[in-house]
Image 1 (spheres, rainbow, N blue to C red):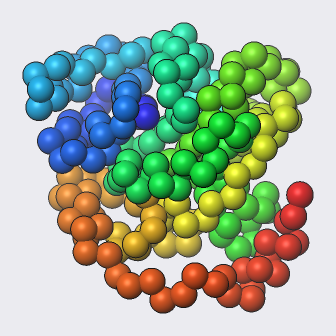
Image 2: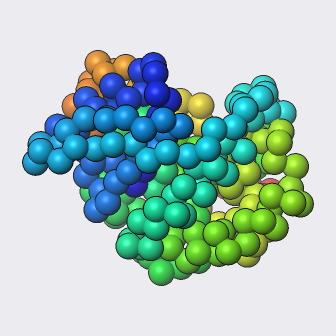
Length: 248
């Protein structure tokens, strides 16, 4: 698991505060933090100091959806991830925003059935999105073989896709599909305020976003320990019709 943080602002202190919770990226088998500057994020309970890994900065413009057109920035992040090579040590690599509450134990339950496949997780089916169901960027999950293909063929995407008007999550999904990586649909893996709403008592979700300050993050984490009952496991008709319209 890895996160990307700005050298200043709320993100690094928020990650540091998560170190003693036993959750977040710190509960993954391996973890890293990337930034445009090298600095100490904090010290783990075992005394290990965590420093950022650096990547080359890039200008962030406005996307076609009036959000951050940060595809180039994250191309550089992924370059750094590839060079660090920790992705080769695990079955899955997870990119997590600092303001997402990540529960790795739940996440493993979602991902285990797909381990060994050649895919990435599509985690949001918000109605009426122009692109249809897609991977939202606060939590992104990729199998080892998917990243192997990405690192081998990323130049194909850089030279042929209109990434300069895209956010990083749309770019990554489009690129992976272009180079033959499969979509793995899991719309219960993730509870997101920009997708279909965030509910920290969701009994199935493995990540909750956004929780942008330490207090909100900790309250959400506590709420995950008291999940609400599951009402039904069957998707409503409107959702089934919506998904049929985007079958690939």
